[in-house]
Length: 186
Image (tube, rainbow, N blue to C red; front, side, top):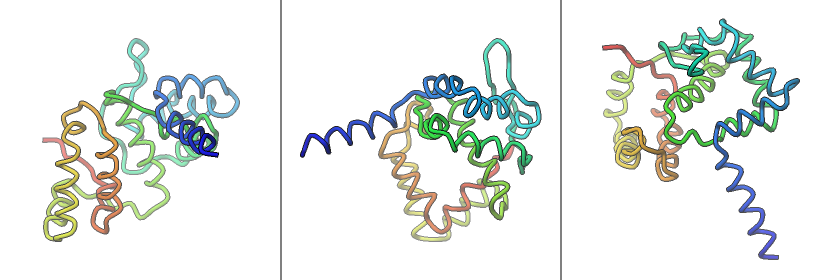
């Protein structure tokens, strides 16, 4: 009986460790489902513009500017179609390693869907931080996040401990507004 639990755990853990490159390749193989949704998101100007991305023929997808406040419904629909497939679900949890474009793209896809499905008030990072510093629990959670995610902030890696800290921060009352932050250009 123990081996069944071990095997189930092994499958669950190995599924989360798929690289995003492999996840994208698996998605492209399902052209009518996942591949078509991927095409609509990353090859159509409307979605690329809304996401602040550009498809450069030589280097692939690049982050070129901040994303729009709201995404077109066609993009939200394509993202929902993407994540409705098994290959698309793997792309949500794939490992970006140290690829900042991958991490940014994944975050922007989530934000794109949120822009159409929730009350999407945009805060600056400074406003959110001031609000958080005024609340003892939020300030503690924020400090914990900054301490546990130094490698992520430095661009090295995102550890399991950091992911747990991020979940704790984003699920806190004031931390929920952090999902809607807009970074100001200096």
